[in-house]
Length: 203
Image (cartoon, rainbow, N blue to C red):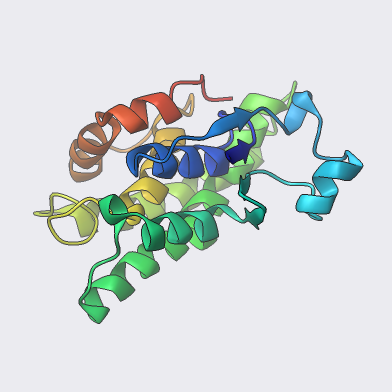
């Protein structure tokens, strides 16, 4: 039995759900986190002491941290297998980590202020958008002349960045035109597994 805990309007849960679906790995989805609660329950904390989502259960094995789940799915599924070339593999790892340490954190304040705060702090939103624009520009420049993030094959880097880009492109704010990012996002978001993982309204 494979079970994924979390809510599908969480960017981190979206990554895990997309990867599992892309890999053809059936799973039971258990809603948790945010308004749904559950994450402070003793049973959940026994699995994930952080009280965060997502958490993956698989026949007694428990794994948390969304990018760890991405790497685990890639390691166990031919459909998302990491590149054999060590340099190409390292580039996939690089962009997966960049999503978690740079792009998503840059837009966090804008997201929380615009979606979760009754009276948004305009200065916080503006500062966050400025940081996010700089990261969007980096990704846009990288994607020039490329079909996918690394090489000509879809990888977990496209999942991690695709979920982050989904949030960025759906913020109710003005953004600079990023033609390469927009083209790539349309490609990866058009995959059936992406449509299922990203189907919840952003918020």
